[in-house]
Every structure is written in structure tokens, then in C-alpha cells.
Length: 124
Image (cartoon, rainbow, N blue to C red; front, side):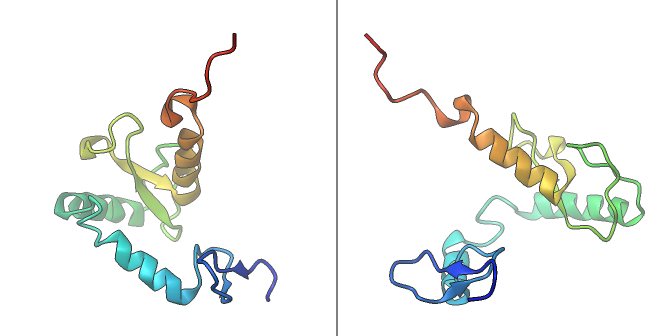
């Protein structure tokens, strides 16, 4: 198996999985179908229009990342980042570097308030 690759996490699948992929190629297709379309996941026409508006500005090289405040190179991959407090309010969405957006999501998922209350009983 090439360096960085690992076995597919689907039960009893011996196929190798590339480093940046969740599943092997066959199971990745299955996974993507199960997620639904972009519109079904909440990225409908309003989101697509807003993303296009930002894409045009990024192409001109005039946009900074909402997270780190550094310039977004037009050749870089970028995300239309949601507001941390209100995911559904597109008025608050702005571009972020891919890594900045994904890091923020990972950090948010590890905060105590995102996980809910501690399920362990209080000490006596």
C-alpha cells in the first residue's frame, strides 16, 4: 500500500483509501450519493448566487479571509464560510481559506458547548 494510504473503513473492504479521502473509490461514490445534492444539504440557489458573487471578487484579488484576515490568492481553494453563531444566515457568510474554515469547524466540534453536557454523573 502506498505511503499515507490506509484500508477502507467500511466493514470487510480490503481496498486502499487515499490520504485525503474518507473511503475507497467505490465506497466514496456510495457515500456521496447518501449525502444528497448540494441543494438538499442546504446549498441552494441563494447560496450558489452568493458564492458566485464572492468568486468574482476573489478572482480580482481583493478579498481577505474572514478567519485569519490574510489575503485569499485567487488560485487557492476557498470556502464560503458560515457564521459560527447562525449557520443559516447567508448575510453573515464570507470567504475563508479552506484550512481556516475546516480548522474552525474542528475546533467548534471539540468545545464543551458543542458536545452538550457531560453525561457522567456528578462526583459524590
